[in-house]
Image 1 (tube, rainbow over the protein chains, first blue to last red):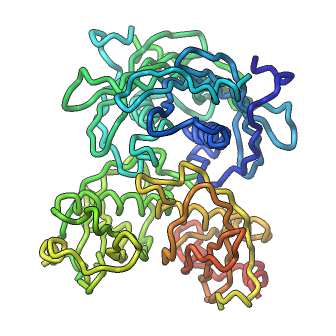
Image 2: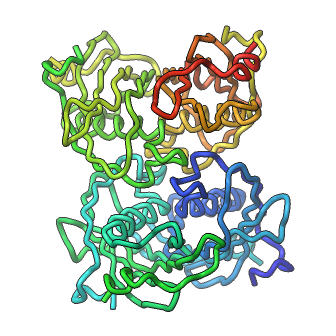
Length: 134
Length: 134
Length: 134
Length: 134
C-alpha cells in the first residue's frame, strides 16, 4: 500500500537542519521520527475530531528502514500512506524521499497509532479519522 | 532472546532530561532512539575493532514498541541483548525499564546494524563484535 | 558572584549523550541550554511555590560563553549561582565544568528569569524563590 | 546595526517543527540556537574560504533575548546582521520574526564567532568573510 502509485494522505516538504546531523555527518536516526511526527501531526490536525477531551492518539510502535544516508543541506518530502485501518488503531506507512529526486528513497516503514480515552483504554477509531483514510 | 533471564550486553543507567519531553508532557517518541543509540555506542566502543578505517556499522532498521508513557524526572535503564548474529549484520533487542522498578517496561524492540566498507558495501561482521555477542 | 567560592544553588552531575554532538564532533551549542534548563528545573522544582496557577517563570534572556569544546563521552557538572534578585526577575549565573576536573570550565554565563501571571504580566518574585536564593 | 532598516546578511525562512515545542507548549529556549545556527551556516557556506584546512570558526558566545512565546505551527524568518567586524572575530546580531507579520519579534541578540587555526589559536578573520560583511 505504500507503493508510489497510492495517493499519500500528506506529502510534506521539509528542510533538513544542520542540527539534524550527528557526528557521522548524516541525519541522525532519531531525526527521522521527528520528520514523521511533523507530517503525522500536520495531517491529523486537519482532521476534525482527531483529538478531543474524550480521546487522543498515542504512538504504539514504529518501524523505520534507513535506506541511504541523508546529508545536509537537503530538501526532503515526507509521505504518509494509510496502510491498515483497525478497530482502535491506524497503521501509517511512510516514505521519505528527496525533493529534487523523488526516486531517491531515504526511509520507509510504518507507524501504529492507537486511540485511547482519558483512562488510557483503547477506544474506537474516530469516524473522522477513518473517513480521512479512505 | 530479549527475555529478562538473558544477560544483557549492556544495562546503561540514564537520566531523563526535561527536554526529552514534548508538548504532551511525555518523553518524545524520537528520544527513545537517542537512549538506544547511547547504550549501543557505549557498548560498541568497548569492543576493539568495532570500527576502523576499513569498516563501520550503520543502523539499517529499528523497531520500537512504546509500552507506557515516560514522565520527567525518571531514571531509566537501557538494556541491549544480542538477538541475531548474521553474516554482515547484528540484530540487537532492547528493553527500557524504570531504574526503581525493573518490571516497569517503557519500550522494547529491535535494531539491525550492518557493517559496511568505505564504498558502502556490506562486509563480514567483525570477529570482535561476533565474540562480544556470544 | 559566580566565582567558585560562592555556594551553588545546585551542582547537577550530568552525563553527556552522543546525540549532543554535532557534525563538528563537539557538543552542539544549543545543548548547553538543555544542560542549564535541566539544572534550573531540578533546582526550582525543589522550591515550593516556584510555579502555581497564579504565576510561572519564563526565560527572558540567556548569555552563554563557550570556553572549550566538549567531547563525548564526558561527565559534567552544571552549577547554578544566584547572581541578582530583582523585583520580578532572577538572574542565575552558571558554570559547566568537568566532573573529573572541576577547574576545566566548558561554559559560564547568565540566565534571566521573569515571573509572570496568567496574562503574561510580570509579578513579584515568589517569596519562596527569593528565600531559596539567599 | 540590528535595526530593521539595515540589510540582513541572510533572511532565512524556516518552518517550526512540533518537536521544537517543550512541555510548556512553546518553542524550547534551546531551539532558538538551532534556528540561528541554520541561518549562520547557510550564510557562511555561501562565502568561499569561510572554512578550510587552515582555519575554521567557532562560536565563542551567544546572547539571546526571548521576546514572546513561539507556538506551533509557525513560519518564521531568521535574520542575521553584521554587528561588529573584529580582528579575529565577528559579531552577528539576529532577529527572529514571524513570516506573516514581520513586526512580531520573537527574539533578538548577538552571536560572537572566532576564527581559529588547527591548534585552536585565533587567526585573522578571513578576508572573504570580512568582505561579505561589508
